[in-house]
Image 1 (tube, helix red, strand yellow):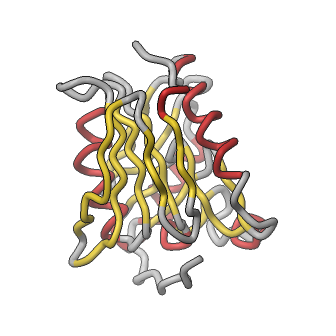
Image 2 (cartoon, helix red, strand yellow):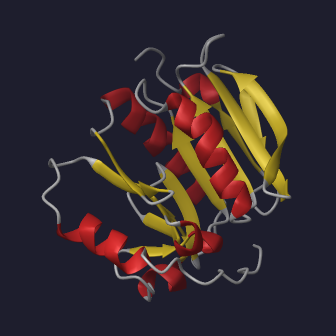
Length: 197
């Protein structure tokens, strides 16, 4: 697994943003993120969305060592850019989660892989904004499971972030296999993903 890059200095308003997120009364089960200094609240995911996350999580655990975890609903932050995301899945070292710097989040730069599963309300954001943010943070791999892609459900693996941009490593339709390279060396059969909304 890759070494952790150094996170730049936090934005001067970072603590206020995080405090507002933590202390406000959000709807139960909602996902609360900070995107470029703006608090974004989305409803809980649909059942099919959650089933896909569980299937990917189970596959990832077949290849990870005890020192790494696959987390749902873990906040990952990039304070210099006023960002705190809650990926559908994120692979980070267990040691980072055991001793988080920010309380309820860990550094985004600690992630080896982020996984987002689109919903109708956030599909374009996951495709563009999160891909750019994860690349900028140097996250080695980003798996986008796009249930609402215009040409039909697809899975795209992004990697090799350079100059804040990912390369598209592989793109498959639901029903085909996607391969995560080292350090995972894992093939995921997307045929097990539930179709539909």
